[in-house]
Length: 377
Figure: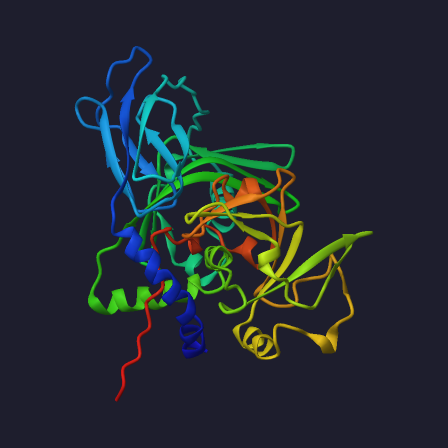
């Protein structure tokens, strides 16, 4: 299976090699951070969400970060005592300059519990499971500063937030994660939503550990939403192992056409850096073997040309099956790294396998699968 997954990445690796070449040129996001009185703020943390890119403002409030290339970036500025400021940046040229003003954050006094909180351990166990996930990667994660999490409950709902970065070590993927948790909600019906911003740092490790991390990262990347959206950008979804079908919904049941959808009907190039991705609902299965067979049969499934009906309440049939439903806002803008300008949660309604891949299975957007080369004997 591992050799199959490696060979399935060959086409995307070749396509991404051109993207890497472009990335070598420097694209910069720079600017100045001030307070409400236009006085410079030094030492503010400036970072790009979902990446390994972070810096701090200098003594006159200036900052500059190098982006890997044109694309969609969610830039954040955090300083103790001030409200976090975020900017959605669509970088199309070589550089962009921003003026960012911070406002003083009101002090919120959280309830102080004298003695042990009998509910804290229970709430924290729920939080870890729903926030990190339940996969092998998630179980290897450790939150180093859980004491900064604020829990509250109301009408069978559990809420959580934090005033500073949650520090998480992912020992399976080799990252230290700084997660700025904005919201977390979990209902008694096991429905969970959360939002926040994240910085990745490489853990120090031995050569053997680094090899294990590289293997685990590749396995995590294969079939992920990042992998899928990069394939969408390059119009190589079937080549990359994704079998994608048009989905319909009626009377509490959903239907899909067994013939793989043609992405040239869904994707329109905006320029060399962005595509517009418009659809109503997709059923997505990561199955490289089936995808290869479909390519060999000229992308058709004539033997199963009738519409297939499935009960929407039925359990997932495979561990790799997901549904992606576009939000009411219309199309999503996707860049070569698999980023979505408006963010995944604001653009898509996601069901199935991808809903179980949470913080413990996140990779930074700089991640690229290894380029596979063949040499003649």
